[in-house]
Image 1 (cartoon, rainbow, N blue to C red):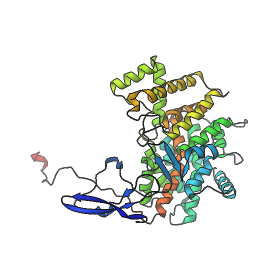
Image 2: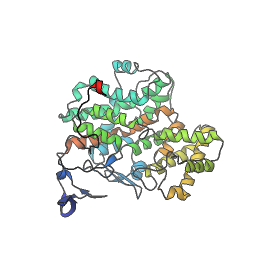
Image 3: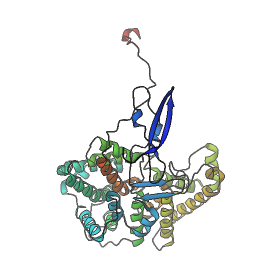
Image 4: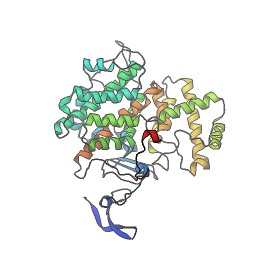
Length: 434
């Protein structure tokens, strides 16, 4: 294993047998204890949820949840949201460095050029029921791309892999807009290559056919930054699924579709919907935010949007999302009174969480989902579309993680072990004797 620290080691003793384990030095964060040499038929390490198990070495994303740090390829998320844009970050995640002006322009042009989907694919999209779950449709559509572009599925061919990555980046944007419009029973629109990635996505999602459409620059910027903060987040559930699928050499389309299916789970990608439902419940209940919180504490109910598996301080992504939501609420954008009320409730709920010892002692700070749903709603998206927007932003990270896995010579097909706790050997009992 590369970069193993041969000077520092860990000692493990099991039933009188001693093992010396090498350490893998990290550039940031905790070092790794290399335990792969211990795998045998006598015993295995048991780590439910893989909470202390590193499945890989990665150079893509670094998180320090205790200090509110999130970096892509070493760049702080705050700097990227201040200075960069989603397509540039997508390049950064996949290639490891910020693009030159020429590289970025070529990448931008190539992605825009491939946003169009063929008429057969449009017909395929029309075959789903209008009320089908958007994430199920999205996963099926990405899987189907492999059948429409079979000459881009050979993962041993670097050129084909490059093309597949571009096609997914380009066409998922179009697919999500189609899902949104079909869900509303509205006509599908063709891409406009002359517009920006996010600007044209909003046009395709909300424009009336044959009428001019101008996206509000603030909403374009806000959605662009939401895509950035969702672009990658280390070895989370869906990313781990993408890597596991990739370790079996499933093609990029299949691996991304697997990640989308994992993200569809309400414990993963559906949290922003839960936050919005919670805020609406508070408003509709007629009780104060304080009364709602006290009742939740008494009943032991979880408050959606507070707390995170990784962050034990304020989620830096939540701070960025909150800033954009405040700008939207303070702008002259036509925001409904009901949405402003939800925002006020969210602010009051956050204030309680930041000062109430119940939340502070448990490190239950606002996470990224606390404000993103409100922004999606202010832009005009239906609640059912929130997780597809999350997936659209996460596409670059999944692609980067998949490609890093394929390039890592130490990659092995994912095959976790188990600790068997079922019945020991027993004899079969004939049916008539039971």
